[in-house]
Amino acid sequence: MKNRIEIVTIDDEILVGNNKNFNLAWLGKCLSEKGFAVQQITTIPSNKSQILSSVASAFNQADAVLLTGRIGIDEGDFIKRCLCEIFCTELIFHEATYENVLSIMKNSTDVPAEWCKRQAMLPKICTPILNQGSIMPVLWFERMDKVLIWLPGYRDELEGIMQNDVLPKMIDFLEQAIIERRTLIVRERGAVALSVQIEKWKTHLPDNIRVALSHRSGYIQLRLTGESDDRVELQKEMDRQVEQIRAILGDNILADEDIPPEKILTNLLQEKGLTISTAESCTGGTIASYLAKHPGSSTFYIGSVVAYCNEVKHAILGVEQEVLDTVGAVSQQTVEQMAKGVRRLLKTDIGISVSGIAGPGGGTKEKPVGTVWIAVADAERVASRKLQLGNLREKNIEKATVEAIFLAKEFVENKK
Image (tube, rainbow, N blue to C red; front, side, top):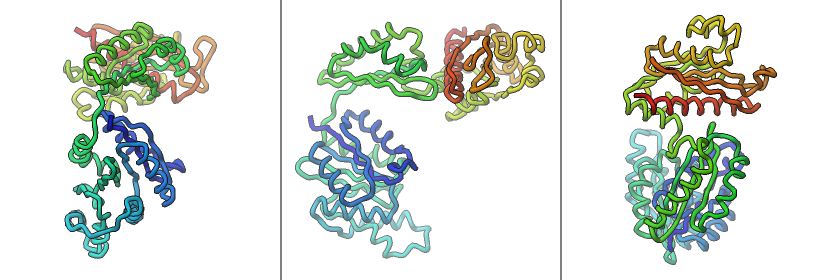
């Protein structure tokens, strides 16, 4: 099947650790959703000999090579010269590209015309795909029934042209595989422990189905990917495998949607027309930041109280002083009163609370580091849960945040 893709990224800053390759993650997702198999990814420096050898190697192995990189304009000229050498061609002036550059730079009075013309010098045998968001067009090269696509720029400059122009052109040129995916959100309990638990199941997976575990903030994403020539049979097999993994992992599966946990909760809140507030101690406002980062959060998320010390828990949230003096801040009674208190204070339908010992210090024999209580309350009910996490502060905050969000999700699902 003619759909093998290789991606070659030119970026010196990634190689020295100054940049993360956000373009690459986005590109991989775009391609796989359209049924293209990315079989190899290579990151190389902006060095002529490495560009020539890496592209030649990729072109020999793949049906399509995507050459990309977050580079400057002057370096773009260098890449175009390298592409000319690869395809044994020369740079020529491209009028439509020149007009596009002039349009983009029309408000920049200090840019000389010669500079604009230089940007319109393109390899003779390529097909340029003009990009209204960038002076540098996407360049499409065909040779021996294969294609190389030069994608210059950042993700925000490429999203539109990728979806509207490049992917449709790739679909016409290449073949698309039938690919099915299933994603499960699994409670964070350590990748090693999870791998051991599913090891026997993995050994019996059909050859055309792969499984991958990815760490996220406070949870693990388990993704199944299957390929076949028969979509109906593939869907049936994928469903069978999901049922098997559900039987193995049980309550450790938190959700079966490929979206962040907080988005699952916020979708529920919007669907039911409910509002929510948070009272946080050891998480220090992390739950609030998760809820507030998605568009439209003002319709359901009202506010938060970060009650780090006991005086705030008592004076603002109404936690009884006797409870704080006897069972302490890290207790079921405290978090339940915190959840009720913030809901009452901010006049919301739901209140979430969390209090614990994030570490690395502060633990006792009775309440070691990683002891966390979470609670959710409405006007009639309250639900609480004790977590026993690890010794790493940041991990404990992430896990407590996600567990509190999922407790709220369960609570809202059961709300009449």
